[in-house]
Length: 631
Ligand code: AGP
Image (cartoon, rainbow, N blue to C red; front, side, top):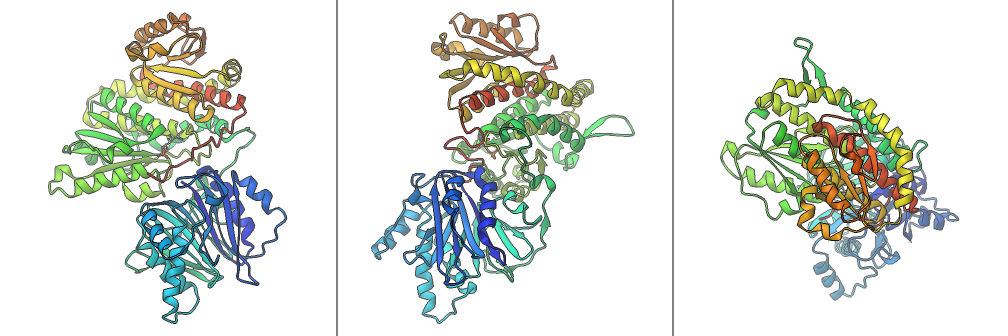
């Protein structure tokens, strides 16, 4: 996955491109590059640098690029190493065409072979480089028809080339033959056009645009557009011109501010009490007639009544939220629920069952595996002529304007605000809350849970914000201290059971993705079936022990680890049994149902401080990107 930005208008393109790329760097930071048309010569000037955007900025320090039309790219390597030669933009042999692309061209090798047979020499290992060469070939063909060199000709050439590409892409193309024009297109990768004053800016995500305008035109799948300073023409895949009204960006889609925090991740961990407040305000509504609380999700009661089972599709942290959700939906609301890795579901879906609700969970709304799995499920259900098998869909996302927002009608917007740190924290928390809402909604409608129990759960949710604030205050310093003692460890085991097993998985994922320390989460009861062989005094065990159904069992499992000399860290309230821990990260006593919402915070803080103590790039860990828009 990568970020692209493109601009045409009357202002200097360079600062607009750099500013846009700064906001997109979370999408990939293996290399960065820009191409700008020189207004005097119409030549395209390309500048690229391996590594982070800062390297490109350093290179550009003494460059005066006066052009007003340009494209930029920040890369997360898929085809070809993260080095200079593979950095975008890529050009044709003459350097008259430059292209930036986010996606994967699946048939690039066939196309490349054919072009090489025609004598084209490639300069990179990327899939993208076929595109400028193909456009050049197409423009040569079009020139025989005596078409003028202008944006419309470029549009035709790009459209013809796109019909030969397989895979997904968002791309932007410059041609020195049409120096004021840009052609942009998308298929299964995001692209938004911002309407600024005197310029149009096109980018992979809203923050890249938000500094210039809050008026946007999201492009639909399979659309292509020609942008000149005078206007925009958008066409669908049938070459029909599209007319639609622009929309305004929400404030939360525009703000990217680290405040006084050292890293976005820490700031986003500290955002969580506010995330809880927002959720309560948005989704918990008191019925003035009977004083009862209702979950204010935008689907009618009939929708829920027919549902007999649920399947949830997600990746990474979103899958861990889905696992907590599945526990709640089954154990609290009584609805059979299964969770699937999107990447597995795509190729081995379960047999179709009737009256099934499919829930896609993706904070970015752009994860390729999740989008494709949902798409596949919509198609296979729609092909059956039986009402009971029709697709019933809900998406839980932080970006309702994203691909999943266009794919699925029923959206639960987690309203967490933009998350910049690559490691998901507040969006995980908000996804969890969304599942609590769904579980309550199902329990109320299906009557599988007493109203007393539902009321208790709601009351615990209402009490959350100050508890979370207190937790963060208490643990920020202490986990920094703990990190000091543990920053050099090689392996960590996380244990949890029941509703907290997914929290153990999430704790382990957070630690490994930002600190590069090997960590694994297990259901505590499974330790003795194999993983216990890993334990010795060099392998600390972090055990989540929330009072309730499985508390004693978790403590016994922790004893087993202690007997193997592991240093034991407990995530638990102070109570009988927790003396066993060498170090206790105290959380408030709570109803067991609610415990994941409290237990995750100290784990996030500990991972953060360990990575920060190791001097690592917490917000942009190596090899990762915020949303993975390739398979
Ligand atoms: C989170 O810390 C990870 N970086 C990653 O696992 C992420 O949750 C996963 O890629 C899914 O992303 P999504 O929620 O945007 O679909």
